Length: 337
Image 1 (cartoon, one colour):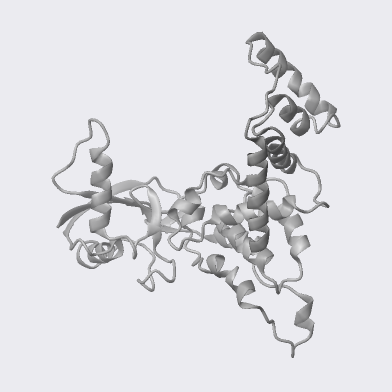
Image 2: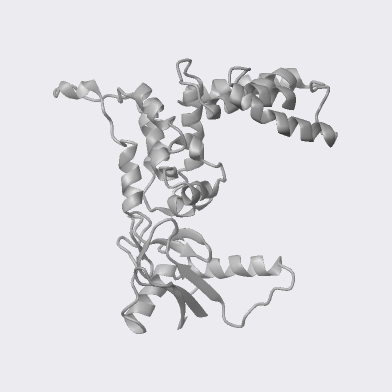
């Protein structure tokens, strides 16, 4: 099949530009196969990373038609079908005679050249969560780090991460908050929280609970889950860390924690959220945050003027069932932490 590859090219600190290449490829060829063909037969100056070519090393992660993916995993036939399906569902779209595939460098990292990015921040943020077992048992060298099959099974999903950077590339929180460590780091962080051999669980939870650099910096957009080639589900792991923090009675106060607890408690009480109590409990911290309470005044007045302030609250008829569901889910989650 005839293909057009539009590759976003760039040198360090220069403006990007698009260069088009035309080639013939089989539908079963991967994007990486095509990039190799372009480099070997048309343009030897094209720069990109690769290594195993078998979805193991994670080196060839890049943005393919707007989403981060592994070039060695994505086949051109599947990609063309996906683009055609999108075009068919889009009004006034036009299909070219030659399918066009756009390849760009990953996001949230500066470009070194073409499709090669500087991943230093990616590695620095991974190191920041200390993604290795740290335990007092290390002081006894003859002791083995034994685990039951069930304990080891809890680590399987996070252990599948190949550190390709796809989730980091698509992270909205990282894009607007340079202090956020990223979904890759927090997925590895949960592996440590769930590891029965680790002796620093409480200290880890305190670290991951800090301001907006840890789990509370996540915007829950689920982009990381959607692009992960190994189904690690970073967003799911972040949620598990949040749950572990919330279940600690000694967790220091923060508005993020209070927001989560209040939301769950209000739904348990009435089946849905009582907005009157929500602001007072979260922003006003149950009348302990006077500055927060004062900030609610102007908003409350505007709501009253526009008739949007709920004077009454009627609990849901199914509140008991909602409460039962919440407790059941928490019981299930606690078994996997």
